Structure formats: C-alpha cells, structure tokens
Image (cartoon, rainbow, N blue to C red):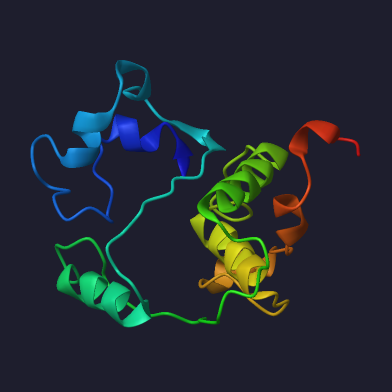
Length: 160
C-alpha cells in the first residue's frame, strides 16, 4: 500500500464497516502525524484486526460490499491453507511484518504491491512455495520474498 495512504484517504480502509462515514472509526483514532499526503513510490504494511473469524465470514463481508459502485468488484480467493508457523502470536506476526517492510520500502504496480505482499505473507504463514499474486501481470516479474519476514532488517544493506 502507498506510504501514508490511509491517512491521506481519511481512514477510508475497505476493511472497516464504517468506511464511508464522514469521520470513520479509524480516522478518529489517528494522531495528527498520521494524517498526511501519501507517497506512491514508497510502501507500508497496514494491519487490521477484522471481525471475521474464518474464511467464510471474511468472504461474506467482502460479498456484502461487492458491486459496480462498491468496495470490491469481483470477489475471488485463490489460496487458503492452515497457518503452520510455530511462533505466531500477534507480537511475533508484527515483528515479521516489520522485518519484511523494512527490507524493501518501495512501491511498484508491477513488482511490489499488495498482491505480491499477500502472496509472500500467505506463503510464509502456510510454509508453501507455490503461492502466486492474483493478477497475471504481477506474476510475470514476481519473486518469492518470504525470507524477508525472518531476518532483522537492520542487519542488511542494499548490497547484502
């Protein structure tokens, strides 16, 4: 996702039930520092604690908000698997996500975006190698980067 995008879009995240309210719950919770223009050449990871307890409930939420003028146009999922990580507490997941985003901060419609992140994260959680981004265009130059989740980013430079 674009760096600063959710603040620049007034907290209008697709995963919130009150997304279209003039001042939704997420935007109300923001300190002033998070309300800023976005940078479309840099990326960030956003984590939402959604109400869905399983895949069926998540798909139900998405279908509720699907249509020509809705949040989602064509709801489909291409991968689902049990989480096979040994260390998967919220704090550990947060550390994995921080390590991943700090290893590559750029945003690219083709090489590094929400689809490539979702493929990497699903593959990492499930311990699978064959997970691919949804769109064919993103698959063309996709390289699995699940190792980014595992290692402290401050120990790497652009050359190493």
